Image (cartoon, rainbow, N blue to C red; front, side):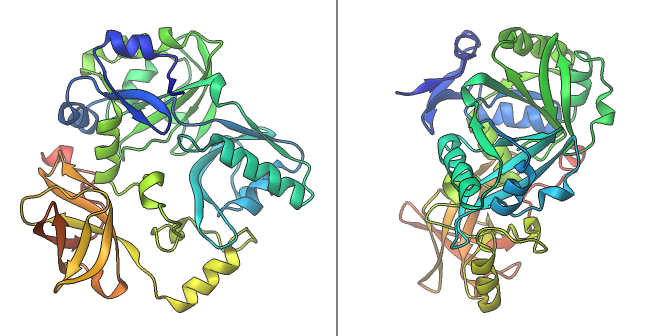
Length: 368
C-alpha cells in the first residue's frame, strides 16, 4: 500500500501534482519544476521530505555501532554535530548513504526513502554480531521532515524561533522550538544552498509549522517545492540519489565518495575497498555536460568511437544552465576533464563534455 505524508491534505490544497516514489505518494510539483528550482537557487523554498526515514540508535555502545557500520569514526563527531556517511556490505558496496546526528547519548540516522527497515535490521544484526550493547529503533512513522532551503532560508526560519540560527553551524544539529513545535534542526540539505532540515514529531502540530514557515517566507516569495525540483537541484550539485547512483552495487570509490571515508578505523567493507583501491581498475562517477541538444536519462549508454564506455546513472535538463547534464559511470581512461563522449538518447547520439563538478557553481545566482 502506498504511504502518504501526514501533510498530504495540505499539499492537495496547495495544488500539488503527485507521484509515487519509493512506496510514497509525494508532491512532484506545485507550479512547475523550473519555477520551484529557481526559487530555491535565488531565494527560498519549503520541502516536505517525510518519505525519508528516522532511526534512533541508542545504548552504551551506540557510538561503536555507528563506527563499525559506517565510513565514519563516530567518536570524531561531537555532540550537536551531524555527519554524512554510508553503510556498506562486506564486499564494499553501498547499502545506503545517510546523515547521522549526535544528540546527547543517542544518535538519529536518516536513511533514504524505503530504506528504514533494511537499515534498522542491518544495524541490529551487526550489533548482535559484534556483541555491542546498542540497538536501532525505526521511528519513521513518528516524524515529519521539512527542509527549508535557499539563500533566504535562515531569514525565514529565524522569525519562528528564539535560537540564533547563526549559532547552528554547517552540519550542526540541536533540539529547538520552531513555530511553537519542539523538533530537531540540522544545518544540512540536498540542494547545495544554505538550508535547514527539521525533524518534527507527529505529536506536534506539523500542519501549523508548515503553514507558519510559508507565512514567514512570504516577503522572500517562498513557495512549496516538490520532488521534481529536489531532483534537479541535487543533480546540478552532483549529489547522489541512492536508487540511481548505487544501483547494481556500487562502492564509495566508484561513487566518488572517497572523501567521506575515514580510513583510520575498522569498518565493514574496509578490506574490500582497500583491495579495489589498490587495483584502481573500475568505472567511476563522471560529470557530463551536453554540447548538443538532448536530455540524458538514467540508463542511457555513454560511448566513445562506437564502443560503450559507460552508463548514465542520473540525467536531466539543468534549469540553471538550460542544457542536458548527467552523472555517469565511465571507464577510467575516458574521465579526463574536457574529454568529448557520446550519449545515446532515444536512438540519437548527443555529444557531451566531461567537466569538473559541480555543474552549477556556488555563486551562480549572483552572476545570473
